[in-house]
Amino acid sequence: MKTRFPFVDWFRNSSPYINAHRGRTFVILIEGEAMAQGRGEQLIQDLALLHTLGVRLVVVFGIRPQVLEALTVAGIEPTRHDGRWVADTAIMSHVERIAAEQRLWLEARLSLGLPNTPLHGVELTAVSGNLVMAKPLGVRQGIDFDHSGEVRRVRANAIQGLLEQGSLVLLPPLGFSSTGEVFDLDAAEVAQQAAVALSADKLILLGEADGLHDESGALQRQLTPAEAEPLRHQAIPGSELARHLGAACAAARHGVARTHLLSWHDHDALLGELFTRDGVGTMITQHRYEQLRPAELGDIAGLLELLEPLERRGMLVARSRERLEHEIDDYLVIERDGMVIGCAALHVFADDTMGELACVAVHADYRGGARGELLLAEVERRARRRGLTSLFVLTTHTTHWFFEHGFRLAEIKALPPLKRDTYNHARKSKILIKTLA
Image (cartoon, rainbow, N blue to C red):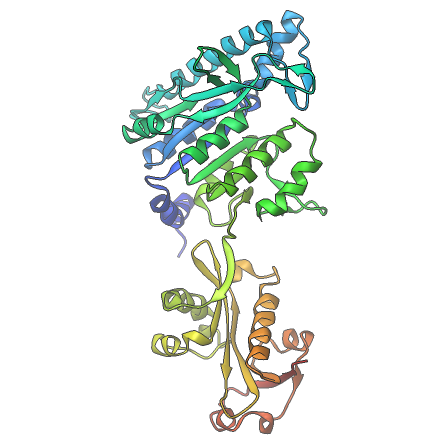
């Protein structure tokens, strides 16, 4: 039954993610362009919402466009090399001033609590400080980078202490040295190093693009660092794409479970990525969050939920919990972020070289992604390893799909004796057989 209020269904469906994110540490990078284009207010409201839901937040903010505008007004043209500018004394004075102004603006907006505003009643303490230690880039290829630096160390214990007190931590793209100097840093590197030092659960990079796309223009939902690295090498040095992919790949390789590439242009991106199963951007992760694997007893509830609609429509024979528990070793599942979205089983007949392909099912929301083919291919690999020479399947609704994948019609006498004796003539299932090469 549909609710009168659409948000109620969304809220119910998001509850697993609310529970999963509570107490977790997220490092979020907001590039300077977002603030320059007036997106700061909406993002701050989303950050406040995450805070109220118990997420521990470290927010890194960029200032590149604001500094460039100030330099243009001052008639200063920065020297660039290998994607970084040389921050001499004149440039550094603008960097420090604008970083301070941006931090103060963020702190002021995070303090907003007037009635009839989204932050009404939210007690949010924003804290910044000398939390990132830095060192100079030095002289590279004959160029002295002066006050341009790189992260030396993130003071993780200090940040953890602030997070445990319920504070939101703000990190500007600045670092401090033991000699008392201030260095201009790449905001993406600050975010990546902070995420690694804190063993963050997520690193979220909000930039221009809504993720990565393949050659056909389709959004790539998930990549491993190995898959993303070639794209980084193809990107222009110093570009946002190069910086974000560098940060994402490094974070993944150093233990950050998931890095999300999102667009600040999309007002729904941050919450949509965090509180829906499929998200809206690209995720870089060492371990795929959709995987094909052998089923376990813990999957029984998910299998029952997946199969029930198909059993109700007569597409599958009903299977009890007890039967699934008894046959669980025969099953494969496709798990997506904790949800069973596909399954198939291989039942082997001891006195025959023929196996039964059974219970091939894919959740209605995830059809069309070749998951059925993936399940079939893995069942066939299992069958060959068991020394089987053919597979049979009984189907009432999907005959043509099996035809397209090498099965052919057969008579009941072609079935193993045990299956032949238990064949349900009332269902009139088609019998299809495939020879395994």
